[in-house]
Length: 119
Image 1: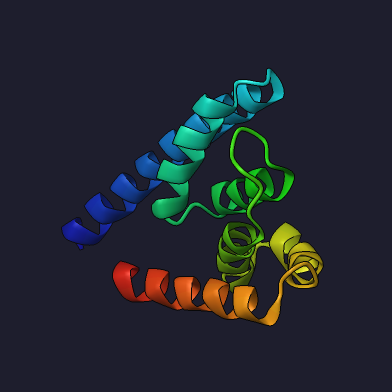
Image 2: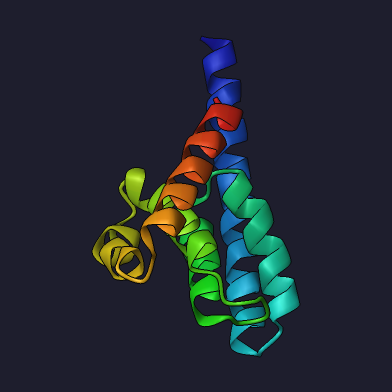
């Protein structure tokens, strides 16, 4: 029981830290400091933080501080959508319509690869 409580506490602390860092990165993005937002959203996205995955996808969709890349967009938005993130679920189809069949296949491959690496 003690291990469960410790694990739950550590998870809560990590999520609190992630939320704080996420809020700071949103503020950086809003100021046009895309490099800071990109760095933090990449870090949080790789940790599985759904809002960061979605926002990272939006950066690639809009080309904000990164080259516009619909494959990267779909990869990150699809990852967030596949875990139930509402905004990603609502918008994934928009990105999918921008992709060629080859790009769609590549994005799907990257998503499968990401899942294999994180499990």
